[in-house]
Length: 347
Image (cartoon, rainbow, N blue to C red; front, side, top):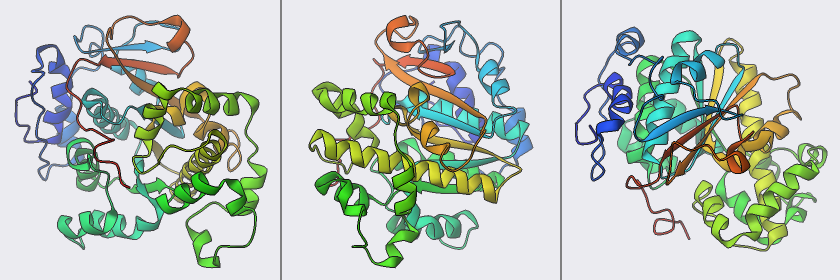
């Protein structure tokens, strides 16, 4: 029940099973207690049936075959990277991400990589994860998104409890705003102090990361659509509207930086699967982060899960959903949204 106050992280995942009885006017408050990984996983719902008959979500393969959460989790077993693409105000997507993280981590230890934190605050994340700083100080210094407490805190707290490393994967917003304002030439010259390049992919990376025609068309299709610009902006709440070319350069930097962070995480944690949470735009149709990751690491085994809110979450639209990802999860768009990104956007 959405009204139910959940006392453990396992309770949070089991609430996904109760979506058919969800109350559309409230959401659960997720509170993590000090439980071990094994204790939490033992309380996970039956994944073989979850998703097949849920009122507020459906799960499909890339070709439209209906499957359960178990099929999704089993596909991650041998993956190096799992990309979970969401719409950032989708409450069901956030429950699913927690469930997939918990279940995948039982099969193979994970790293949680997040678009929602920027790479220059990695030290702050590390300090909080090992318990050296309090949450109040973490929130002051980590610059979390406006919907952190409702939508992402439960994943971070779960990772903290069970020892999953967390990667602040996004490029710092000041660079995205700069390239979105003046274009890619801002990184074509040695105009930044050398210290800045600790947080942005190197100029050589950017020069060699030439996007495919499909990738460029994908970005421009979104940028040219006024309706879809709102969707793109959700992935970066501090990004303002700009000219198409400037927006294109910013998105390329954005995807390149997250791919760079994922590649570094794979090198640092070779024994773990990297589960990366981002806006669906950044990983759908085998583009975005997937394409950019090939610049850093060849033959990476990637599983992509795209989560889309739809008015009819039980109908797979072949024209829109086919081949969007390895797995397409449709969620109930009629459920209350968790956040107004434009109201909370950073100027």
